[in-house]
Length: 243
Image 1 (cartoon, one colour):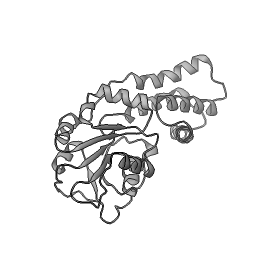
Image 2 (tube, one colour):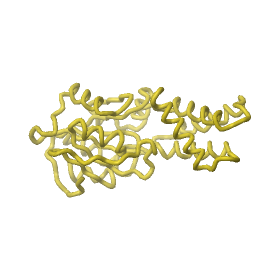
Image 3 (spheres, helix red, strand yellow):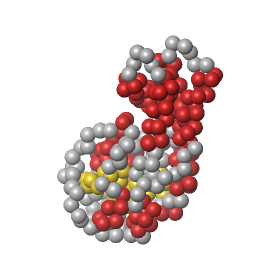
Image 4 (tube, helix red, strand yellow):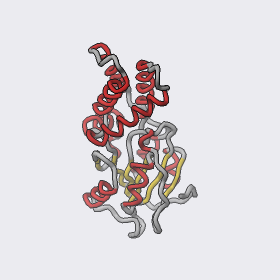
């Protein structure tokens, strides 16, 4: 991993994550989860234990149904049913769904430096948005963000794994990391989805720390293979100093 200041030539391809890289996302889920845990008010499990139960359900549901608000809604309802002995009444169902709706009602909040830095990067490099999740939800967030014009393409795979990165590289004829000055980088805040699979697919990667990255996206970052680079930056705007 490197934090050294090095400038890369124009013409790079930058794959850029969306949630918690370009705009806030997980903080709204965390607020909804906190409200849910308070509502459950379990008398046997602590708040941390209820959260761990919810994490288990979310792992199950994202594996089976993917990401997005629908999956999250089912996770909250399932978690409540597993923890409660009173049953899920229509009133309780409506209250839990309201926690999810609070996320949908949020305006897009760009992260610091994104609005100024993204057009600067787009003037020198090829930008492709690569974010996993629900197709309609992610496309809607991009449209509401006002950032769509800076990307030459948008990819929303169900999962961002090694295979997904290789498919995108093949689709857009992206230059492998070992070929000349113009190479391909993945930029994001998730070690699990943005950094490790991109490095495994032969790309360079840039990790931009976010203090509220989803717990299910936490992972130990692998060291970059020989000939590949892994940069770690503290904010999005620092990209302009490198690219």
